[in-house]
Image 1 (cartoon, rainbow, N blue to C red):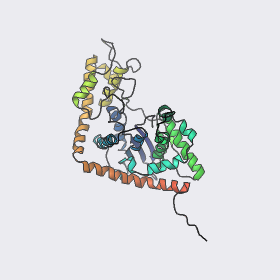
Image 2 (cartoon, rainbow, N blue to C red):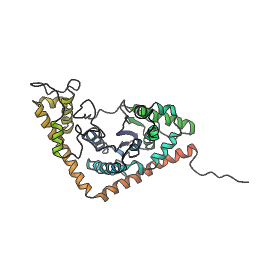
Image 3 (cartoon, helix red, strand yellow):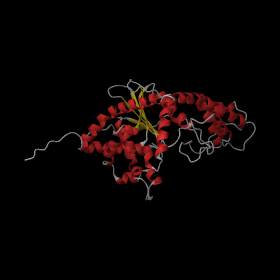
Image 4 (cartoon, rainbow, N blue to C red):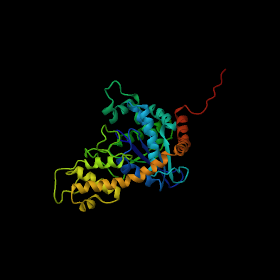
Length: 358
């Protein structure tokens, strides 16, 4: 949950077991990038081997700003296939594995969001960083941007997360989730697990090739510094060959120093992440910037090739892809139903009431 979230993770012990449950949502605001894969998706692939995982496409999150409906549908369809191509395995009914779903196909997310809106205070939502930076004082700001934190809280609370690993930029949203859960429980009765905030393990952080001081984001206006997962080899070579470095030359120019040499260090991070190496050790074997860019290109192409091959196979079988997400949505509806039902009953809109009319 960042100021412009693309993904977030919540973890909890599965009910009655020592298993870990993980939730991660990706917002379809643009084409998935190398940064998304190395920084988030690859970890999701690893998590599914030791946890019960719920991996979703947060399409409702994409409605908080103006958007083209046709483009949004295209991005959702592309993301559905790419998540499978990256290695996510649809075995949500096992004790471990991944359940893949689209957020809007699990109505509990939007319904619980409204119940939490009915628990939140305007003062809290006014203080949220995303609203202050993107919406406050702008007449055409969508109400959904203002109430968006309640939807994010619903995402977490529906899956009974006991821990939410977040960075500093995401902390405010989880703090609000905790506040809403505590207030709801104290006002209406114990329903929600109140999640603890934890520090996540450090993941790969891939920066924009043209501006190595900013993350490689899928919704940037220009794609010149972004390697997309479906970029063809020629595009990858061109983008990396034009990556920003610096004016140093000679022995020692290729070294890992993110503060002094952000462009060079970004390329070393990319190589190290793709090859499973340490960036400092990687630098020792590269004599020049030309060699650095060639090595980065080779590493990225080797990473993307199997993903693109699987993507092509999956695109040729759309019914199979649709079946995975239909089954995943059904599983999530069953998973979230008890939490939503309990919240509805507690707040006064669930169950039946019989009144004798005289």
